[in-house]
Image (cartoon, rainbow, N blue to C red; front, side):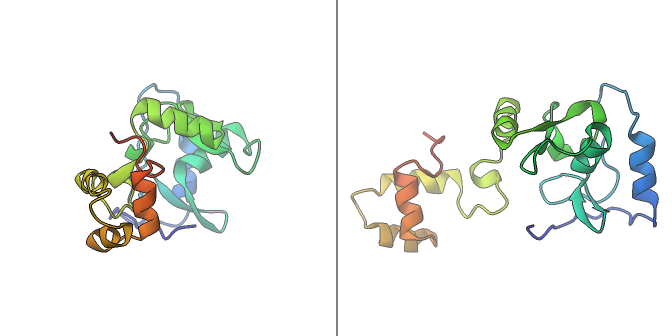
Length: 165
């Protein structure tokens, strides 16, 4: 699991997270129910649960719907507001990775390009890299943008940032 960076929130007292989750398990409102504790850099609720750190929406989904059908299933947000810390039980369901990614694309919340926390490039830099095809070598372009020649090749062939015109 990648290192999680938490947003500053008041530290939960022992047992407070479990109590909050169990109290809100029966929440039946239509609007999003925002996670009141720590969130990761992407805005998703984060909590210590069953001996480790987990995404709060995944814990809530498991409390409501039971264990995921397969270990590869993800807790998907039907509301598209997981990045706002939504843990409304009515907004959560188990979905395959491809189903969840499809929903994220429909909601406009798919982390693409510079929205990804690990992205080294901005949209304008990708456009510039593509404009240098045939002008400079992949190695030269990579040095200009501090990326590998292989990554330059993927960008030019649209295997990376393929959605960007």
